[in-house]
Image (cartoon, rainbow, N blue to C red):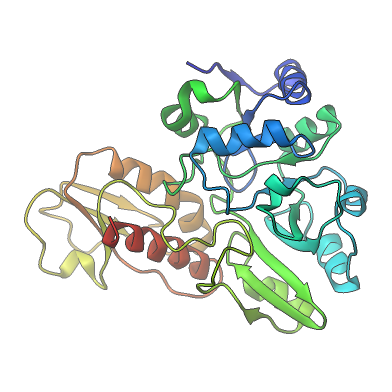
Length: 325
């Protein structure tokens, strides 16, 4: 079983040694826990795909600790992309660029572009700095399953496949990063996430939604069936007040439900209806419900503004995975 250690200066230094020697390490970010490898070592990155059972067509995000490192990875950085990085890095925003040859093809799934972000978590930043290399890191979970927001989630899913798990506590944002691509004058949304679109539009003036289905992923996390519990999941308006299917039924409610009698287990994203709290609790609540041996999970939708858009993106993908099993 992989050793989970409290993140401190000594354990971060040891984790950096593991990464420099070609190992893989799970570490906290403000979004979710990542499973990291030296982004410039293709053999180490192959271990990430193997540990997650991740298909080779799904690219990885490369994490950096200083904005200046971007120029070592990107062939060109459009002025608007640089402005976005200056405004929102460190933070839950990933930007996609044409890549330099230094970035291995396995990291980009053979694409000519690379996805880059600077995480806003002191452990993640310290680890990248100590390693002295950019770190390629998807979420530290089995492919398609619920993303981890605590070290225990990583240990339960990946176990001995990881060389070390750095425990930095619960992730503050709880949703993967928002992914953008600058195409000339257009700002393309490839994946909604932990940075609200409304915040970005204050700088860009507008965004074109390109996050729907495409012939192949253009960015991480674009597969239709993703972020899914093993328990079947259905999104139903007013799920608490609707007729229930037979069997053991769980409820994922946005606010405190008016009635919860008859449900085997209930999780509430935010009693006060706060979308930031709901985003931070989403994957934790799904992990809790999935651990209860339920026959089905009913989910109430959340308002689709701010972070609600990213929450519903994850829930619809989880529902799609349930339907396609």
